[in-house]
Length: 153
Image 1: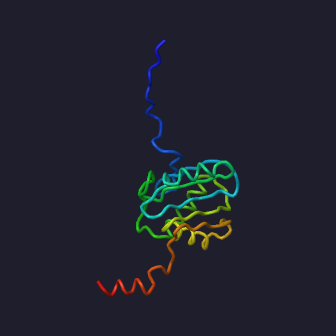
Image 2: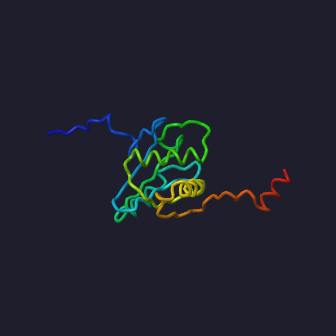
């Protein structure tokens, strides 16, 4: 008996889910089980798939979720302007709509680190901890080195 491959057009081309947060949809991909849940926020220009190896390695003992900010990866473009306050509000909405209970341990890479620091200040009861990976910070451009570069131009 011959078996033929029947393509399934209802399969989604991404891992995880697209979640409607009211104004647009954000992509989130969670693997594993455990508490607290780890939430990963990528650097600027990055997206959730960059973290899949780390997610899978941690999934044996933790629930680990990576997501795509609006306009990145599989997420829809969101309202403008794209501010850290808006991004933080959208992440909070995504976690609520996804029914992922806090508190969370956040991992923030580069610009994602800036965002999770802001999230932690805005929602301290939802933040169990933070891991900053080459994180941006509020004063990073207020340095003597940056001022010297600025004057040369």
